[in-house]
Length: 453
Ligand code: ADP
Image 1 (spheres, protein in one colour):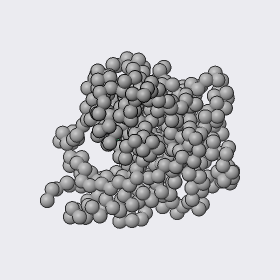
Image 2: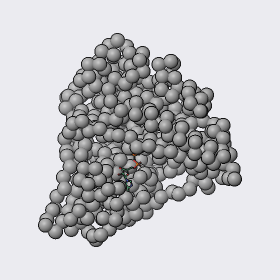
Image 3: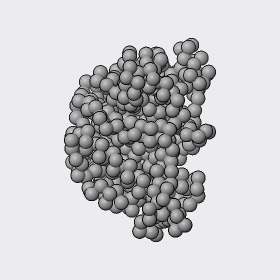
Image 4: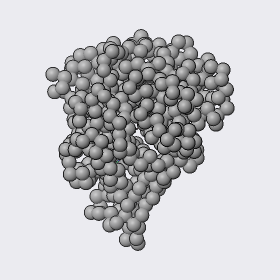
Protein backbone atom coordinates (compact mmCIF):
# COMPACT_ATOMS: atom_id res chain seq x y z
CA UNK A 1 0.00 0.00 0.00
CA UNK A 2 1.26 3.49 -0.88
CA UNK A 3 2.39 5.47 2.16
CA UNK A 4 1.14 9.02 1.72
CA UNK A 5 2.21 10.16 5.20
CA UNK A 6 0.14 12.91 6.78
CA UNK A 7 -2.61 14.39 4.66
CA UNK A 8 -4.23 17.79 4.16
CA UNK A 9 -7.73 18.48 2.91
CA UNK A 10 -8.69 21.29 0.53
CA UNK A 11 -12.16 22.70 0.01
CA UNK A 12 -12.23 24.10 -3.55
CA UNK A 13 -15.49 25.97 -3.93
CA UNK A 14 -15.60 27.10 -7.59
CA UNK A 15 -18.24 28.84 -9.71
CA UNK A 16 -19.48 25.71 -11.42
CA UNK A 17 -18.68 23.06 -8.81
CA UNK A 18 -17.41 22.29 -5.32
CA UNK A 19 -14.63 19.83 -4.59
CA UNK A 20 -12.94 18.36 -1.56
CA UNK A 21 -9.44 17.12 -2.36
CA UNK A 22 -7.09 15.18 -0.10
CA UNK A 23 -3.35 15.58 -0.68
CA UNK A 24 -0.24 13.89 0.68
CA UNK A 25 2.13 16.19 2.57
CA UNK A 26 5.04 14.02 1.42
CA UNK A 27 4.90 14.95 -2.25
CA UNK A 28 1.67 16.95 -2.72
CA UNK A 29 0.17 13.97 -4.55
CA UNK A 30 -3.61 13.93 -4.88
CA UNK A 31 -4.85 10.93 -2.91
CA UNK A 32 -8.58 11.23 -3.62
CA UNK A 33 -11.33 13.80 -4.15
CA UNK A 34 -15.02 14.28 -4.65
CA UNK A 35 -16.71 16.88 -6.85
CA UNK A 36 -20.29 18.10 -7.16
CA UNK A 37 -21.72 20.61 -9.65
CA UNK A 38 -23.72 23.54 -8.33
CA UNK A 39 -26.60 25.28 -10.04
CA UNK A 40 -26.20 28.76 -11.47
CA UNK A 41 -29.46 30.68 -11.75
CA UNK A 42 -30.02 33.42 -14.36
CA UNK A 43 -33.21 35.13 -13.11
CA UNK A 44 -32.78 38.21 -15.30
CA UNK A 45 -30.68 39.53 -18.21
CA UNK A 46 -27.08 39.75 -17.01
CA UNK A 47 -27.88 38.32 -13.54
CA UNK A 48 -26.23 35.22 -12.05
CA UNK A 49 -27.01 33.80 -8.62
CA UNK A 50 -26.27 30.72 -6.55
CA UNK A 51 -27.97 29.39 -3.42
CA UNK A 52 -25.60 29.84 -0.42
CA UNK A 53 -27.19 26.80 1.28
CA UNK A 54 -26.52 24.67 -1.82
CA UNK A 55 -22.92 25.90 -1.84
CA UNK A 56 -22.52 24.91 1.83
CA UNK A 57 -24.30 21.59 1.40
CA UNK A 58 -22.22 20.69 -1.66
CA UNK A 59 -19.02 21.29 0.32
CA UNK A 60 -20.26 19.09 3.17
CA UNK A 61 -21.25 16.33 0.71
CA UNK A 62 -17.86 16.51 -1.03
CA UNK A 63 -16.08 16.19 2.33
CA UNK A 64 -18.19 13.20 3.32
CA UNK A 65 -17.82 11.41 -0.03
CA UNK A 66 -14.06 12.07 -0.27
CA UNK A 67 -13.63 10.60 3.22
CA UNK A 68 -15.57 7.49 2.17
CA UNK A 69 -13.21 7.14 -0.82
CA UNK A 70 -10.23 7.58 1.53
CA UNK A 71 -11.49 4.78 3.75
CA UNK A 72 -11.94 2.59 0.66
CA UNK A 73 -8.19 3.07 0.12
CA UNK A 74 -7.71 1.78 3.70
CA UNK A 75 -6.49 5.18 4.88
CA UNK A 76 -7.80 6.53 8.14
CA UNK A 77 -9.32 10.06 8.17
CA UNK A 78 -7.10 10.64 11.25
CA UNK A 79 -4.23 11.10 8.80
CA UNK A 80 -5.76 14.43 7.74
CA UNK A 81 -4.11 17.11 9.88
CA UNK A 82 -5.78 20.31 8.71
CA UNK A 83 -7.91 21.74 5.95
CA UNK A 84 -7.78 24.84 3.80
CA UNK A 85 -10.39 26.72 1.80
CA UNK A 86 -10.07 28.13 -1.69
CA UNK A 87 -13.04 29.76 -3.29
CA UNK A 88 -14.67 31.62 -6.16
CA UNK A 89 -13.86 35.23 -5.35
CA UNK A 90 -16.03 38.38 -5.14
CA UNK A 91 -19.25 36.33 -5.02
CA UNK A 92 -21.23 38.08 -2.32
CA UNK A 93 -23.22 36.47 0.49
CA UNK A 94 -25.22 38.27 3.19
CA UNK A 95 -26.75 36.39 6.08
CA UNK A 96 -28.51 36.88 9.41
CA UNK A 97 -26.15 36.15 12.28
CA UNK A 98 -29.07 35.34 14.61
CA UNK A 99 -30.88 32.80 12.43
CA UNK A 100 -27.86 31.77 10.31
CA UNK A 101 -30.08 32.06 7.20
CA UNK A 102 -28.91 33.78 3.98
CA UNK A 103 -30.79 37.06 3.37
CA UNK A 104 -30.55 36.70 -0.42
CA UNK A 105 -29.02 34.38 -3.00
CA UNK A 106 -25.26 34.70 -3.48
CA UNK A 107 -24.61 37.27 -6.24
CA UNK A 108 -22.00 35.58 -8.40
CA UNK A 109 -18.86 37.50 -9.40
CA UNK A 110 -19.80 37.75 -13.08
CA UNK A 111 -23.31 39.09 -12.38
CA UNK A 112 -23.76 42.42 -14.21
CA UNK A 113 -26.91 43.73 -12.49
CA UNK A 114 -25.01 46.51 -10.76
CA UNK A 115 -24.23 48.48 -13.96
CA UNK A 116 -26.32 51.47 -12.81
CA UNK A 117 -24.91 51.24 -9.25
CA UNK A 118 -21.48 51.48 -10.88
CA UNK A 119 -22.48 54.67 -12.74
CA UNK A 120 -23.81 56.25 -9.54
CA UNK A 121 -20.63 55.36 -7.67
CA UNK A 122 -18.41 56.76 -10.43
CA UNK A 123 -20.34 60.06 -10.21
CA UNK A 124 -19.58 60.13 -6.46
CA UNK A 125 -15.81 60.03 -6.97
CA UNK A 126 -13.80 63.27 -7.08
CA UNK A 127 -12.47 62.67 -10.60
CA UNK A 128 -15.72 61.06 -11.80
CA UNK A 129 -13.93 58.13 -13.43
CA UNK A 130 -13.98 54.41 -12.77
CA UNK A 131 -10.40 54.69 -11.55
CA UNK A 132 -11.30 57.12 -8.75
CA UNK A 133 -10.62 54.57 -5.98
CA UNK A 134 -7.66 52.77 -7.54
CA UNK A 135 -5.04 54.41 -5.34
CA UNK A 136 -6.83 53.08 -2.23
CA UNK A 137 -7.89 49.59 -3.31
CA UNK A 138 -6.09 48.86 -6.59
CA UNK A 139 -9.35 48.22 -8.45
CA UNK A 140 -11.62 50.09 -10.88
CA UNK A 141 -15.26 50.63 -9.94
CA UNK A 142 -16.98 47.73 -11.72
CA UNK A 143 -19.86 45.30 -11.38
CA UNK A 144 -17.31 42.57 -10.54
CA UNK A 145 -16.36 43.58 -7.01
CA UNK A 146 -18.15 42.70 -3.78
CA UNK A 147 -18.72 46.20 -2.31
CA UNK A 148 -20.67 47.18 -5.44
CA UNK A 149 -22.83 44.08 -5.08
CA UNK A 150 -23.26 44.75 -1.34
CA UNK A 151 -24.35 48.34 -2.09
CA UNK A 152 -26.95 46.95 -4.53
CA UNK A 153 -28.22 44.51 -1.88
CA UNK A 154 -28.53 47.27 0.73
CA UNK A 155 -30.40 49.48 -1.76
CA UNK A 156 -32.67 46.87 -3.33
CA UNK A 157 -33.41 44.08 -0.87
CA UNK A 158 -35.45 45.29 2.16
CA UNK A 159 -34.55 42.19 4.22
CA UNK A 160 -30.86 43.08 3.84
CA UNK A 161 -31.18 46.78 4.74
CA UNK A 162 -33.44 45.90 7.71
CA UNK A 163 -31.01 43.30 9.04
CA UNK A 164 -28.15 45.77 8.54
CA UNK A 165 -30.00 48.47 10.52
CA UNK A 166 -30.69 45.99 13.30
CA UNK A 167 -27.03 44.89 13.38
CA UNK A 168 -27.89 41.33 12.35
CA UNK A 169 -26.46 41.35 8.81
CA UNK A 170 -23.10 39.72 8.13
CA UNK A 171 -21.32 40.10 4.80
CA UNK A 172 -18.83 37.66 3.38
CA UNK A 173 -17.29 36.25 0.26
CA UNK A 174 -17.69 32.47 -0.11
CA UNK A 175 -14.65 31.72 2.08
CA UNK A 176 -16.23 33.61 4.99
CA UNK A 177 -19.66 32.03 4.47
CA UNK A 178 -18.12 28.54 4.53
CA UNK A 179 -15.75 29.23 7.44
CA UNK A 180 -18.52 30.76 9.59
CA UNK A 181 -20.76 27.75 9.01
CA UNK A 182 -18.07 25.08 9.37
CA UNK A 183 -16.87 26.59 12.66
CA UNK A 184 -20.24 26.69 14.40
CA UNK A 185 -22.41 29.20 12.53
CA UNK A 186 -24.75 31.11 14.83
CA UNK A 187 -23.18 29.27 17.77
CA UNK A 188 -19.88 31.11 17.64
CA UNK A 189 -18.77 30.65 14.01
CA UNK A 190 -15.62 32.58 13.02
CA UNK A 191 -16.40 35.61 10.86
CA UNK A 192 -13.06 35.88 9.09
CA UNK A 193 -11.67 36.34 5.59
CA UNK A 194 -8.10 36.34 4.29
CA UNK A 195 -6.22 39.22 2.66
CA UNK A 196 -6.56 37.80 -0.85
CA UNK A 197 -10.34 37.63 -0.71
CA UNK A 198 -10.55 40.97 1.11
CA UNK A 199 -8.47 42.55 -1.67
CA UNK A 200 -11.36 41.84 -4.10
CA UNK A 201 -14.05 43.69 -2.18
CA UNK A 202 -12.95 47.34 -2.86
CA UNK A 203 -13.19 47.91 0.91
CA UNK A 204 -9.66 46.90 1.89
CA UNK A 205 -6.78 49.34 1.68
CA UNK A 206 -4.21 47.73 -0.60
CA UNK A 207 -1.28 49.12 1.43
CA UNK A 208 -2.45 48.66 5.05
CA UNK A 209 -4.39 45.43 4.37
CA UNK A 210 -7.16 46.65 6.68
CA UNK A 211 -10.75 47.75 6.01
CA UNK A 212 -10.38 51.36 4.90
CA UNK A 213 -12.53 54.06 6.60
CA UNK A 214 -12.73 56.15 3.45
CA UNK A 215 -13.79 53.21 1.29
CA UNK A 216 -16.36 51.96 3.82
CA UNK A 217 -17.81 55.49 4.01
CA UNK A 218 -17.83 55.79 0.21
CA UNK A 219 -19.82 52.55 -0.15
CA UNK A 220 -21.95 53.22 2.95
CA UNK A 221 -20.92 49.95 4.56
CA UNK A 222 -20.72 49.51 8.36
CA UNK A 223 -17.50 47.80 9.43
CA UNK A 224 -19.47 45.73 11.95
CA UNK A 225 -20.88 43.60 9.15
CA UNK A 226 -17.44 42.83 7.70
CA UNK A 227 -15.31 39.79 8.55
CA UNK A 228 -11.96 40.16 10.28
CA UNK A 229 -9.05 40.21 7.80
CA UNK A 230 -6.33 37.63 8.52
CA UNK A 231 -3.33 36.22 6.68
CA UNK A 232 -3.78 33.34 4.24
CA UNK A 233 -2.04 30.80 6.48
CA UNK A 234 -2.96 30.53 10.16
CA UNK A 235 -5.48 28.63 12.27
CA UNK A 236 -8.83 30.46 12.07
CA UNK A 237 -10.96 27.90 13.92
CA UNK A 238 -11.89 24.23 14.05
CA UNK A 239 -14.60 22.15 12.39
CA UNK A 240 -17.53 21.73 14.77
CA UNK A 241 -19.32 18.81 13.12
CA UNK A 242 -18.92 15.78 10.89
CA UNK A 243 -16.24 13.08 10.77
CA UNK A 244 -13.43 15.66 10.82
CA UNK A 245 -14.79 17.49 13.90
CA UNK A 246 -12.03 19.29 15.80
CA UNK A 247 -9.72 19.60 12.78
CA UNK A 248 -8.17 23.07 12.33
CA UNK A 249 -8.99 25.20 9.30
CA UNK A 250 -5.65 26.79 8.65
CA UNK A 251 -5.56 28.30 5.18
CA UNK A 252 -7.70 30.53 2.98
CA UNK A 253 -6.83 31.78 -0.50
CA UNK A 254 -9.05 33.09 -3.28
CA UNK A 255 -9.03 30.48 -6.06
CA UNK A 256 -6.89 32.45 -8.51
CA UNK A 257 -4.35 33.27 -5.82
CA UNK A 258 -4.36 29.60 -4.82
CA UNK A 259 -3.48 28.76 -8.42
CA UNK A 260 -0.61 31.29 -8.30
CA UNK A 261 0.75 29.53 -5.21
CA UNK A 262 -0.02 26.06 -6.63
CA UNK A 263 1.93 26.94 -9.78
CA UNK A 264 4.84 27.96 -7.54
CA UNK A 265 4.91 31.53 -8.86
CA UNK A 266 6.90 32.73 -5.84
CA UNK A 267 9.27 35.04 -7.71
CA UNK A 268 8.38 38.46 -9.12
CA UNK A 269 7.63 38.12 -12.84
CA UNK A 270 6.34 34.54 -12.61
CA UNK A 271 2.80 34.14 -13.93
CA UNK A 272 -0.01 31.66 -14.41
CA UNK A 273 -3.25 31.65 -16.36
CA UNK A 274 -6.29 29.69 -15.21
CA UNK A 275 -8.95 28.71 -17.75
CA UNK A 276 -12.13 27.97 -15.77
CA UNK A 277 -15.53 29.67 -15.96
CA UNK A 278 -13.56 32.86 -16.61
CA UNK A 279 -9.83 33.29 -17.29
CA UNK A 280 -7.41 34.82 -14.83
CA UNK A 281 -3.81 35.73 -15.52
CA UNK A 282 -1.85 36.59 -12.38
CA UNK A 283 1.74 37.73 -12.20
CA UNK A 284 3.70 37.89 -8.96
CA UNK A 285 4.75 41.54 -8.59
CA UNK A 286 6.69 41.30 -5.31
CA UNK A 287 6.17 42.90 -1.91
CA UNK A 288 4.96 46.31 -3.14
CA UNK A 289 1.65 46.88 -4.91
CA UNK A 290 2.08 47.91 -8.56
CA UNK A 291 -0.68 50.17 -9.87
CA UNK A 292 -1.85 49.30 -13.37
CA UNK A 293 -2.05 51.86 -16.16
CA UNK A 294 -3.55 49.37 -18.59
CA UNK A 295 -6.79 48.21 -16.99
CA UNK A 296 -5.33 45.38 -14.90
CA UNK A 297 -6.02 44.84 -11.21
CA UNK A 298 -3.72 45.24 -8.24
CA UNK A 299 -4.41 42.44 -5.81
CA UNK A 300 -2.86 40.56 -2.91
CA UNK A 301 -1.27 37.32 -4.14
CA UNK A 302 -0.73 35.68 -0.74
CA UNK A 303 0.42 36.34 2.81
CA UNK A 304 1.77 33.11 4.20
CA UNK A 305 1.27 33.76 7.91
CA UNK A 306 0.56 36.60 10.35
CA UNK A 307 3.45 39.04 10.39
CA UNK A 308 4.77 37.74 7.06
CA UNK A 309 4.96 40.22 4.19
CA UNK A 310 2.09 40.28 1.74
CA UNK A 311 3.11 39.46 -1.82
CA UNK A 312 1.16 41.29 -4.48
CA UNK A 313 0.05 40.34 -7.98
CA UNK A 314 -1.05 42.10 -11.13
CA UNK A 315 -4.14 40.44 -12.49
CA UNK A 316 -5.95 40.29 -15.80
CA UNK A 317 -9.51 38.99 -15.41
CA UNK A 318 -11.81 37.78 -18.20
CA UNK A 319 -15.40 37.03 -17.19
CA UNK A 320 -16.24 34.49 -19.88
CA UNK A 321 -13.91 31.59 -20.69
CA UNK A 322 -15.33 28.12 -20.09
CA UNK A 323 -18.71 29.76 -19.50
CA UNK A 324 -18.85 30.29 -23.26
CA UNK A 325 -18.49 26.54 -23.81
CA UNK A 326 -21.22 25.95 -21.23
CA UNK A 327 -23.41 28.46 -23.11
CA UNK A 328 -22.92 26.58 -26.41
CA UNK A 329 -23.88 23.40 -24.54
CA UNK A 330 -26.82 24.63 -22.46
CA UNK A 331 -28.29 27.51 -24.48
CA UNK A 332 -27.57 26.56 -28.10
CA UNK A 333 -27.26 22.80 -27.63
CA UNK A 334 -24.60 22.47 -30.38
CA UNK A 335 -22.54 20.25 -28.07
CA UNK A 336 -23.74 17.95 -25.32
CA UNK A 337 -20.56 17.91 -23.21
CA UNK A 338 -17.81 20.53 -22.80
CA UNK A 339 -15.01 18.33 -24.30
CA UNK A 340 -17.10 17.92 -27.51
CA UNK A 341 -16.22 21.48 -28.47
CA UNK A 342 -12.73 20.29 -29.34
CA UNK A 343 -13.97 17.52 -31.63
CA UNK A 344 -16.24 20.01 -33.37
CA UNK A 345 -13.64 22.78 -33.70
CA UNK A 346 -11.04 20.36 -35.08
CA UNK A 347 -13.31 19.54 -38.04
CA UNK A 348 -12.43 22.91 -39.61
CA UNK A 349 -9.02 24.47 -40.07
CA UNK A 350 -10.15 28.07 -39.57
CA UNK A 351 -13.22 30.07 -38.55
CA UNK A 352 -13.24 31.61 -42.05
CA UNK A 353 -13.85 35.10 -40.74
CA UNK A 354 -16.28 34.20 -37.96
CA UNK A 355 -15.56 35.94 -34.64
CA UNK A 356 -17.21 35.42 -31.28
CA UNK A 357 -17.05 38.10 -28.57
CA UNK A 358 -18.58 36.43 -25.50
CA UNK A 359 -19.16 39.63 -23.52
CA UNK A 360 -22.19 38.12 -21.75
CA UNK A 361 -21.49 40.03 -18.53
CA UNK A 362 -19.86 43.11 -20.01
CA UNK A 363 -16.12 43.23 -20.63
CA UNK A 364 -13.62 43.00 -17.78
CA UNK A 365 -9.88 43.67 -18.28
CA UNK A 366 -8.72 45.84 -19.87
CA UNK A 367 -11.98 47.60 -20.87
CA UNK A 368 -14.23 47.49 -17.78
CA UNK A 369 -17.30 48.12 -19.86
CA UNK A 370 -20.28 46.73 -17.98
CA UNK A 371 -22.91 47.42 -20.66
CA UNK A 372 -21.07 45.53 -23.42
CA UNK A 373 -22.80 42.34 -24.56
CA UNK A 374 -21.81 39.37 -26.70
CA UNK A 375 -21.74 39.18 -30.48
CA UNK A 376 -21.01 36.56 -33.16
CA UNK A 377 -20.05 38.22 -36.42
CA UNK A 378 -18.60 37.46 -39.85
CA UNK A 379 -21.35 34.91 -40.55
CA UNK A 380 -22.05 33.67 -44.07
CA UNK A 381 -24.02 30.79 -45.55
CA UNK A 382 -20.76 28.85 -45.39
CA UNK A 383 -20.64 29.17 -41.57
CA UNK A 384 -21.41 26.02 -39.59
CA UNK A 385 -21.51 25.13 -35.91
CA UNK A 386 -17.94 23.87 -36.33
CA UNK A 387 -16.77 27.41 -37.21
CA UNK A 388 -18.69 28.87 -34.27
CA UNK A 389 -17.15 26.29 -31.92
CA UNK A 390 -13.66 27.20 -33.16
CA UNK A 391 -14.44 30.94 -32.89
CA UNK A 392 -15.48 30.38 -29.26
CA UNK A 393 -12.11 28.79 -28.47
CA UNK A 394 -10.27 31.53 -30.35
CA UNK A 395 -12.19 34.14 -28.36
CA UNK A 396 -10.64 32.81 -25.15
CA UNK A 397 -7.18 33.04 -26.77
CA UNK A 398 -7.69 36.57 -28.13
CA UNK A 399 -8.88 37.80 -24.74
CA UNK A 400 -5.89 36.19 -23.03
CA UNK A 401 -3.54 37.83 -25.51
CA UNK A 402 -4.94 41.24 -24.56
CA UNK A 403 -4.21 40.48 -20.92
CA UNK A 404 -0.69 39.42 -21.72
CA UNK A 405 -0.02 42.61 -23.66
CA UNK A 406 -1.39 44.78 -20.83
CA UNK A 407 0.70 42.79 -18.36
CA UNK A 408 3.89 43.32 -20.37
CA UNK A 409 3.22 47.07 -20.54
CA UNK A 410 2.45 47.43 -16.82
CA UNK A 411 5.27 45.26 -15.55
CA UNK A 412 7.86 45.91 -18.22
CA UNK A 413 8.39 42.13 -18.30
CA UNK A 414 7.46 40.42 -21.59
CA UNK A 415 6.27 36.94 -20.66
CA UNK A 416 8.02 34.11 -22.52
CA UNK A 417 6.04 31.28 -20.97
CA UNK A 418 3.05 30.79 -18.70
CA UNK A 419 1.87 27.98 -16.49
CA UNK A 420 -1.75 27.06 -17.12
CA UNK A 421 -4.48 25.21 -15.27
CA UNK A 422 -8.27 24.98 -14.98
CA UNK A 423 -10.98 22.84 -16.59
CA UNK A 424 -10.47 24.19 -20.13
CA UNK A 425 -6.80 23.19 -20.28
CA UNK A 426 -7.95 19.63 -21.00
CA UNK A 427 -8.63 21.07 -24.46
CA UNK A 428 -5.46 20.45 -26.51
CA UNK A 429 -6.63 22.53 -29.45
CA UNK A 430 -7.27 25.52 -27.19
CA UNK A 431 -3.79 25.24 -25.70
CA UNK A 432 -2.19 25.02 -29.16
CA UNK A 433 -4.22 27.96 -30.49
CA UNK A 434 -3.17 29.94 -27.42
CA UNK A 435 0.53 29.19 -27.85
CA UNK A 436 0.35 30.02 -31.59
CA UNK A 437 -1.50 33.27 -31.04
CA UNK A 438 0.91 34.52 -28.40
CA UNK A 439 4.12 32.98 -29.67
CA UNK A 440 5.05 31.76 -26.20
CA UNK A 441 5.25 28.43 -24.38
CA UNK A 442 2.07 27.35 -22.62
CA UNK A 443 2.93 24.75 -20.02
CA UNK A 444 0.93 22.52 -17.76
CA UNK A 445 2.62 21.44 -14.54
CA UNK A 446 1.72 17.81 -13.93
CA UNK A 447 3.58 17.18 -10.69
CA UNK A 448 4.71 19.20 -7.72
CA UNK A 449 6.78 16.32 -6.35
CA UNK A 450 10.21 17.81 -7.03
CA UNK A 451 9.32 20.97 -5.09
CA UNK A 452 8.69 18.96 -1.96
CA UNK A 453 11.92 16.94 -2.01
P1 ADP B 1 -14.48 26.85 -12.13
O1 ADP B 1 -13.38 26.63 -11.11
O2 ADP B 1 -14.62 28.26 -12.59
O3 ADP B 1 -15.78 26.24 -11.71
P2 ADP B 1 -13.18 24.77 -13.76
O4 ADP B 1 -11.70 25.03 -13.72
O5 ADP B 1 -13.70 23.61 -12.98
O6 ADP B 1 -14.01 26.09 -13.48
O7 ADP B 1 -13.52 24.56 -15.32
C1 ADP B 1 -14.86 24.38 -15.74
C2 ADP B 1 -15.08 25.10 -17.05
O8 ADP B 1 -14.24 24.51 -18.07
C3 ADP B 1 -16.51 24.98 -17.53
O9 ADP B 1 -16.98 26.28 -17.87
C4 ADP B 1 -16.45 24.09 -18.78
O10 ADP B 1 -17.33 24.55 -19.78
C5 ADP B 1 -15.01 24.23 -19.24
N1 ADP B 1 -14.46 23.00 -19.83
C6 ADP B 1 -14.31 21.79 -19.23
N2 ADP B 1 -13.73 20.90 -20.08
C7 ADP B 1 -13.52 21.54 -21.25
C8 ADP B 1 -12.96 21.18 -22.54
N3 ADP B 1 -12.48 19.95 -22.76
N4 ADP B 1 -12.91 22.12 -23.50
C9 ADP B 1 -13.37 23.38 -23.27
N5 ADP B 1 -13.91 23.78 -22.10
C10 ADP B 1 -13.98 22.89 -21.10
